Each structure stands twice: as C-alpha cells, then as structure tokens.
Length: 594
Image (cartoon, rainbow, N blue to C red; front, side, top):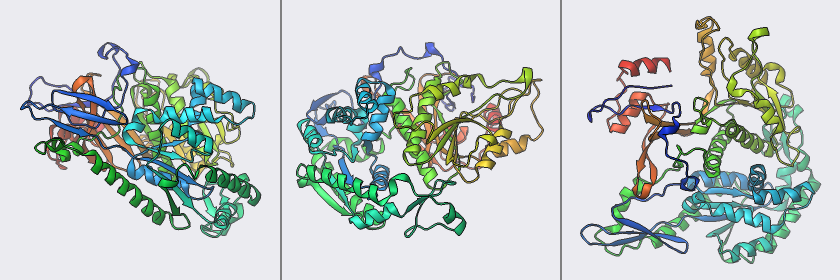
C-alpha cells in the first residue's frame, strides 16, 4: 500500500494514496437509501429542487435578490431496431461511446434479474425453467425498472431491440415511456442472409471471418474455420421472418419518429448518419431547455457548469455494502473496456478494480462481488459465441508446503455452484479450470483468470507463463492480479529470476483501472479517484462535496500513463506538470518500490 506523512500546515502538499485498509469506525453508518448518483449541476446557496413531470428544475436565489430559473438538459431517449446481422450491435456500441447513453437489452436484463434473485427475476425463471416464453408484462416490468434508475434518467438511454411486439409497445406508451427517435437499420434480405451464411468462426482465436467480405489471412486459417449452429440459411430465414412480423406490428406506434438508415454500407458511414440525427436532436433539446428568467445570470455561466459536469463515477463508495446499482455500474464499466480491448485483438490483458468490496486488503472485501464481476464478463463473451474458461489458482508447493492464498480459498467451489443461467452456458460455452498449461484445451477461445497472486514461499508466475504460452494468441484476462514478488518461507526475497518475473508480470496490458484516493493514513473521506478504460487515457478525478450532503467527481487531469504520486499531488494543488521532477523523501522510496 502507498502511504505518506502529512502536515497540518496549509502550505504543505496534499498527499494522497490509493485505497488502504478499511477502518469501519471511520465510515458513516450504512444507509442504503443514500447510495445515489450525483447530479451535474453547479450550485449557489441557498437553493432547492422542484420536480415537474419529466424535467428537473433548479431554482437558485442569489443574495442580491435576483432569481434565475433553469431547466436541465433533458437526455436522449433512443430505440434502435434491426434484423439479425444488420449491424445493430456495432452501432449500439458506437452510440454509447459517442453519447454516453445507458445501453439496455432485454437479454442482459433477464440474466441480471434471474442471477440476482429479484422478485421479477424469480417469476421469469419459472417460465424459462418450464420452456415457456417470458410473458410481456414481466419483460416490460424489467425494462421499466431499469429505465427508472438514476443513471438512465441522467445520462439517457438506448433501448436495444425492444419492444418486439405491439403489446410491448403499447405497454410502454401507457407508462408514458416514449423515445425521442426510433432508428431502424434497413438491409436487404439477401445481404442479411449472405452475412450470416458466409460467416465463419476460427475455433483457435475466436475471430469471426466472412468468406467474401472478410476472408481469412491464410489457407491454414481457412482450413480450420467452422460454421456456427445459428448461421445456416434455414435458421437465418426463420429468424428474419420473425423479425419482420414483429417490426410490422410496432411500426404504427413509432411511425412519427421513425428514421430508416441504410445499413448496407460501411459501419463508419452508417454511424455518421446516426450521429447526425442524434446530435441534431440533442441540440434541439438543449435549446428548448435553456430558459433564463433574467439575462443577467444566464443560468450561472453555462460554460463553467459544463466544465464541472459529472463524469460518471458513482458516489457514496465508502458506504458498505455497495448497492446493486453501484456494483452493476462497475461490472458494466469493466465489461465494455474488456470487450473493446479483445475486439481490437489484444491478447494479454489485466483488470484492476479496487472499490472497497474488491480490495482484498480491506475487511469489507467480498469474494461474491468478485465472482459476480467474473460471471458478467464470462457470460457476455459466451453470448458472442466464445468458449470461455474461468480459471482459479490451485494449490502450490508440495507436502506440508502445499497451499493457496487465503483470499482464494473456496473460490472454485463458489464458481461451480453459481447460477450461470438456464441457457446451458455452463459446461458448453463456460468451463471452470485452474491456472496452468494443462488447462488449455483446443476448444477454448479465451481465458479469465481470477485474482492470480503470489503466496509466501510460492510463485504463480511460472504456471501463469506456461498457460499464456499454451494459449498462444487467444485472449488471457487477469482480474485483479497481485504479481509482485513476496518473501520466501524463510523470509528472504526470492531474487533468482526476479527481473524476469517482474518483466513478465508487466507484459499484461491494462484494459481497466480504478482506484480510490484518500488522505495518507486514512480511509475517509474519499479525496478522488483514478480511472482508465481501454483505449482511453488515465483520468484523475477530485471528489467535491455539495449542498444537502451530496457529492460529485470533477475531472482534474488526464495522463497517457498511470500517474505517479507526485503527479497526483500536483494535479490536486493545481501545479503545472514537471517531467524532470523526481520524487523525494518517503514518496521517492515508495515510488521506486511500486
């Protein structure tokens, strides 16, 4: 852990360190209802909120008696529809990246509700277990609950492939849930069939090719390609017919806001059209929302307000246990970064996320939270047709020295008995294994390694290196690895081969990083956070207290590489960067170690 001494002098630099051991007495008492996402407003005192239908108005009364009334920018609400192989998934990802909308699909909702054991999820599970379709009212209830959450209200939403029937569309209308725009990707039938029938899967790398549009690089690869079960012409035509019937049934409900996009073009050109539509729509909504009563204040200097806009980090992270909403936020954040990295062909990846429930050095560490994160990642890749092997560290050493890190004790059993859904994923697309070359099978497409770490007297790196060598170009993802050298059983550092071990550990590329920052030697209050999601830069945030006990995170700086402790302190103090500056004192020592 990083730590430093601090001074009471106001002129002394603020020293921050990543999340350290949790002190229960230092945190406020748990109040689950207080777990919420902060808003994006700038404030003057005194102030109050007033809610009117779907819009939130901020009324501020400055001391001079002038009054300004501003309504916040209403977020985008988008529905998108498209036949199988229309490119809908690709466009959804591009929309989320550009506009930051909350992506909602019924498949993801069903899995999440069932695995969480909610009342709605249990009802849906009864139908799935008996082989029946989940009724419209249950699916609509799930969608309604998801849309009512704070992140969807603040950031806007993208409803993917729903509603699928006239009854579902009417249910949403009755609940006053209506999109601003209904996007339909229009692709000729023969093109859709050709896209599906021509697809081939490389069982070695998990890469998808197309015999005409995206042929394999060599005859060797071409020889091992296989056709996925759902990509036969008969099945594709059947799925296409069902989609047409559903699309025709709901077309009348959204006819006035429907925009058909030619989907038979390169994805960049398609998104250019979608980007134009959504940007224009957002511009119109913004123009309507800004209505100052007095021009003298002009909504509290809107330019300044935009600079302090909330950047997406949940608040109240020191409240334990974390709410389901906060856990799902981080699961989704990690998943999107991991998917982008894998889609870009990255093969040696690591995820480092140290919210309190995922930091093994805190007494609020929850192995169940780690297992949920692993399940979300594994199921998502399995949905894409990849065969995922989830691996846990086995016993190391021999005889009396055999053992494993205590933080992983029982982990494999937990994974084996977890609910992996009713779609037959476990045993087919998802398998449980151990870290080592012997666990790499030919049919495996990728590997997720749960918290690999060195134990006193035993080093996991040799087994890990053998496994990655056997995996070849297939992705290997480390979740919260701890691969720094530890002392041997005699208490002496294992120096033989140390440089090589550390070099290998550093060869894994970060695709996600999140760590909280505190004053040195404390765990409260949270001072800020560092976050990185592939392929973007490291972002440093400062936590800011707001009236009425609220808080928000304000972006301070960005870094191409993980920032040093001095760079973090300088950013909090507003000092210019000095690339030639060297760490001094205890900070210099710790920077060298870590």
